[in-house]
Structures are given as C-alpha cells and as structure tokens.
Amino acid sequence: MTDSGTGPQPKRRASVVIPTFNRAALLAETLRGLARQDLDPDAFEVIVVDDGSTDHTAEIAYSFTGRLNLTYVFQEDLGFRVAAARNAGARLAAADILVFIDTGAVVGPEYLRRHLEAHGDQSEPRAVVGYAYAYRPEDPTPGLEQMVGRLLPEKLLDVYAHDPSFWDIRHGAFLRSGWDLQNLAVPWILLWATNCSVRTVDYWAVDGFDEDFRRWGVEDMELGFRLFKHGVRFVADRDAWVIEAPHERDDEGNALGNRHNIAQMHDKHPEPVAEIGWNLIHTDRYWPWEDDYRAVLAWAAESRETDVADEIAEAVADLGTADKVAVIGCGGKIPDSLEGAHLFDFDADVLENHGPSAGHAIGLRTPLPDHSVDVVVLTSRLAGLWDRWNLEILAEARRIGREVRAPGLERR
Image (cartoon, rainbow, N blue to C red; front, top):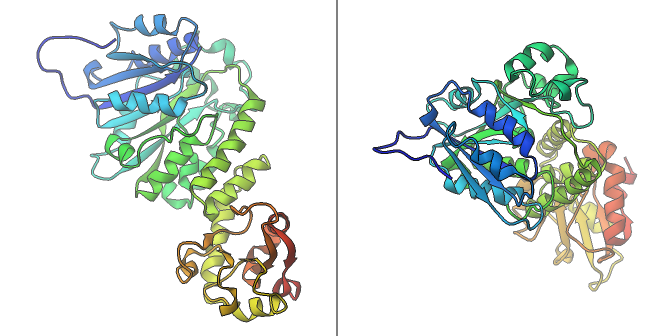
C-alpha cells in the first residue's frame, strides 16, 4: 500500500519505520500521532513492517491510507525478527533520514520536525537518541494506561511531565552527560529503537540491524556500537519525544533474550566494552557500564608500560612444553618459551606485539572451552582492575583452566 498521485513527488525528508506484531490497537495510536505532524505530509513517509501478525494490524494500517504516505509490508511469522523487519522497512525508504519507532509509542505534532532539526544540515553523521517518556518496564507510571487514547500526547505530557515515574529510564544517564552524549565513553548503549534516527547512508554503511539477533533486546545498541565505530556522533534530544503506551510485556522472556543477545554481541565484538556489558546484563545490571568502561580505559593507559614477562616466566617455570597455558594480562612481552599460549590483555595497544590471535579481554569472558588449558596465569597487570573484577576473573580462569596461578597478584 503506497500513496499515489500524478506529477513529480517532493523529496521525502524522513522515513519512519515501525515494526509491529499483534498490537493493532497500539499501532493505531502511533499512526494517529504521525498523522498530526506539523510537517508537510509529503515531507515524510511511514513504513509499517508486520512481523506476521494474526490480528487486524493490516486493517489498521490500511485505514490510514488517506492520512499518511504509508507502506504496509507483511513478513511471515518465523519467530522474533524485529531486526529483519526494520531492515525490510529501511530498504523501502526514500528519505535521507531513517526514524525508528516502536508500536505503541505516541508522539506529539512536532516529533518528526525535532528529529530532522537534530540532524542539522546533515554535514555531520549523527544518531539522534530521542526521549521516551514512560519507558520504564519495571516501574510503570500510575494511571497512564487509562489516559493514553483519551488525551492527545502533548496533553499527556503536560499532565505527567513533572512526575519522575514518567521519565525515561535513561534520564539519569542523560543528566549525567549534561545532555551531551559526546561526554560519554559508551553513548551507544542509550540508542534504543523505541525512538531514534540516523542518516540512511550511515545506516547502510554499517549494514543496518544485524538479523542474527532473533530474540528481544540488545540488537539496537549493537547497531549503535557499529555506528559509533563508524564515526557517527550521538545526540540526545528531549524535544524529539515519544510516550511509551503501557502494554503487556513478557518480562521473563525479555530478560532471557537480553542475556542471550548480549552474549551474542560479545561473540561478535570480543573486546572489554562488550565483555563488561555481558557481565552486567547477566547480573541484572546496566547503568555501571559507563563507569566500568572508563575505569578500564584509565587503567590501560596507566599500566601500558608495565612489563610482566619475568613474572610470567616465574609462574610457568616448572611446566613442560606440552602444557597448555593461557595468560590474562599478558602485556606487550612474553617469555619465548610460551610460544603458542593463549594470550589476553585489556589494552589493545600492547596486543599489537602478539598478532591477531591474541584476545582483547579483561578476563571476564573468553572464547576458550571449559578446562581447555592446563594453567591460567593472571598477572599483576590486572592489579588496577582487581578490586572490581577479581571474583569474575577468577571464575573465568577456573572455568577454562585446570589450575590458576597469580603470583604477582598474591604479592599485592
């Protein structure tokens, strides 16, 4: 379903992509808000990608034909495929800016204009992180469910704006950054597809959403991670807001999906920042991520010249050539006798001396199988991280090795 007309059509400025599954009533609220935008209706399009709904989602979408430049796409229900749905919508997009929004997010009339303004003249690649009022899955705003649909979104905002239970769950992180995400080491963990936008050219430069993610959670910030690596600047904009309409959630299933997907993200990007996220999400935490990663970066810089080659030699002096060894915190030099050992360090710069087989890791999670080495050596290069991560590092060392040796740390 697409809009039709005669003569040349104006260039679309924004393409709004909405994945959906069996949430027809919520979709109606989202589309109703988009139909009230203060932009020229021909300046944007809406692409609804249905991930196999069995309710009247298609009927709702078709009902907005005369009010929006809307395309409806149906994909067979083959399980949770929100990443594939978003990519399918993005492939149809005609605009320079892709805006992603979830079903049930309701918007005021300035919503799209604010997103477009946040991208400026598009001379700089940006990812706009829009605010999501009431996105608090574990702490819903009292009374909001009864009010959505009765009041216009901007009126809802007037009623609830000063109620902390209505604020975006990321509000503290936004405040901490001074609303300037350039001040954060991991701004991409705030890019949630319930409300964000990015230039189409940048989106496809990193290949869009990774369709290997087939469970709930993480796939949006993993896209953010790749955009960040690509040089995209992250911008928070509270004026580009949505209100997340309350709806049923599979809290247990979502938590399991989150844990599965963060492990998948780490496997795709095995480095300390993903390793930290894996640990935090598996222990039902999230917000220490910024501080934890900053601490690793600071210690890496401080310990860069720390040579532990003699310490490692002492730790393995009694081993034979057939013994398998892993070293966590290997530094830039290792004894010649350890050729073939599994090497890990949290500082990518020192790993350049060891070739591509060396692992960039703190030691919280490694790719090695259980008990795959005879001895794991933990060096004193880990000293600055030890108070924070010692239990986790020891647990991983005991998982992969039959014996753990840490003479440099024992002497601390």
